[in-house]
Image (cartoon, rainbow, N blue to C red; front, side, top):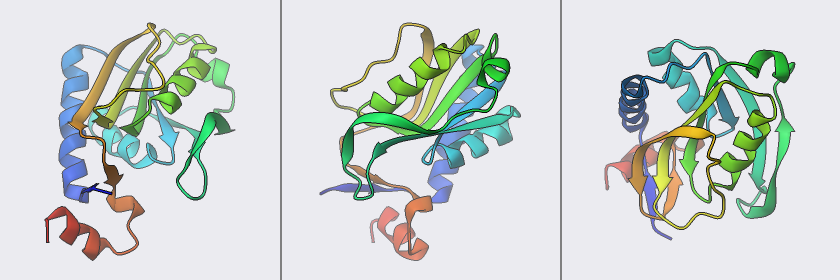
Length: 171
């Protein structure tokens, strides 16, 4: 299977560009919500640029062997979600938009808590047919980059960071 390999520097540049694009849209989030585990590091990096607090949710769609399950399910949700989300502008963050099922699931869960607005930012969007959809309540969807449908290897998943960087450099 063909793969994409990214370094931390690659991700930093993508996040910086994504943050600039969020600002350019005029969307000013009150807080960000990171979909874990993949969205944790991009959300923290976006915090450097956007200066907004991060809430974290755990949504599982893959099993221990990286196989998609039938439906995503909640592992962890936001304590006092109604109070923290209601009437707020939320920027939902994840690392990759693959099937879109996890994003759709999480957006629908957030909508139950009556946010003022929701925008979505992902590092990478795979250019392929999606099983899920972005609900119409989401007015802004931003991807740092569009990629062909290949497995994405992020540096935070690497056992050997030197091998990760060598692969990303094409060595």
